[in-house]
Amino acid sequence: MSRRFSVLFVCLGNICRSPTAEGVFRKLVEKAGLLEQIEIDSCGTGSWHIGKGPDPRSLEAAAKRGIDISMLRARQFTERDLDTFDYVVVMDRQNLADVKDIWHQNGGTRPTLFLEYGQSDLVEVPDPYFGGQDGFERVLDLIEDAGEGLLGDIQERMA
Image (tube, rainbow, N blue to C red; front, side, top):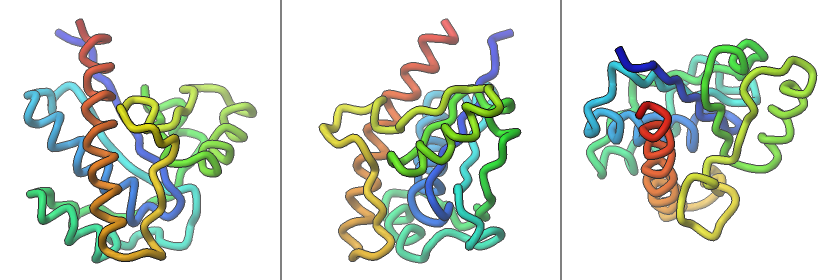
């Protein structure tokens, strides 16, 4: 039996970028026939949105691409996540710094920036929350690209 992997996507509030990443990545994993081998989750470093669904603009942008993230609910990152997940993938530098503070104290999986897995020249997935709908489309483009790279990385480790 092949090894199972787990991926956690992390942003600030867990209502825009990380649930979008969870939905996009789930679709990529499903297309690759690996849903049984890869567990996928998302969370935020902040607590403001715990229990809430994704931002309506994220829902709309994802739905346009055939991705339903409406069932997802925000939760907050915990130190236990560093022991539970094989990949802790963070959307931006500030949230990475916050997660690394916990990692330095507790160990576990070393968190990384999500766009390190993609082809973009950008380092961070920009937070679309205070912008227009085009920002949510841009986030999807970046996430799809990095998601393919991340899946490739996992598939190499499975081989």
